[in-house]
Image (cartoon, rainbow, N blue to C red; front, top):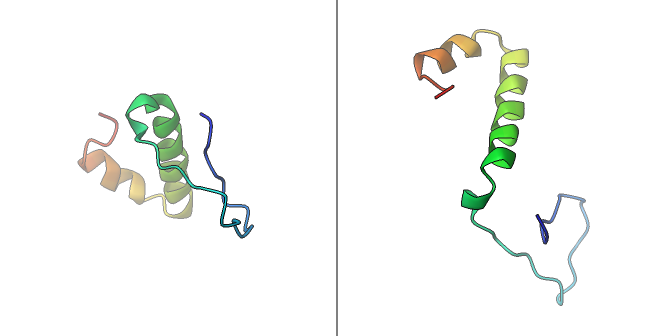
Length: 59
């Protein structure tokens, strides 16, 4: 995954460009991102797990 800019707090120079890339080709990376996010939510509030189950989030 080239050309992905991480939030480093740095101010980009005028010559630097940010490229938006559709995520369709990166399904595993997106799954990992959402898993990390939902795990964080559940850690902060365990009742959130039930909410995700109601929505069949695992599918």
